[in-house]
Image (cartoon, rainbow, N blue to C red; front, side, top):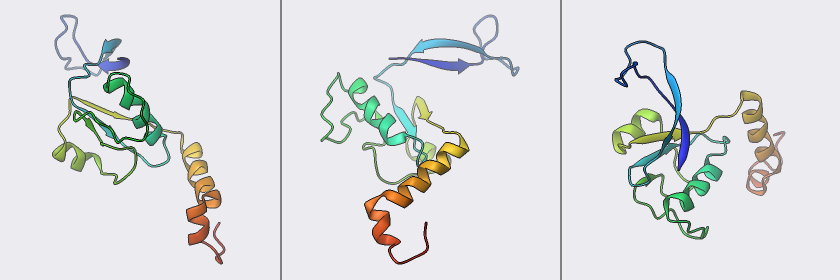
Length: 129
């Protein structure tokens, strides 16, 4: 697995003490612990499901929860935690997340509230949305 990461280093490849950083591609070690910080409506569940086969030898069975004990969360849906809580409860070598622009984030939330069957039953008879 190869991702673009940003690491601060000096000319001698020692950790940098300045704000200058070098960008380079590095191989991620699938044997290390991964933690995904899920932000609602930012494609986190999709990202988690895409990482699953990469960390499990190509197995693409979507009916099974994530099987790799080195990856947290263990399923694409469920509770979401703040960064401090997640770091204190699940120490990982890699912390990942995905972001959206604020406009797209809000649009995704609005369309889920407006068209999702569960939300429609919850807001039936109200002015929302």
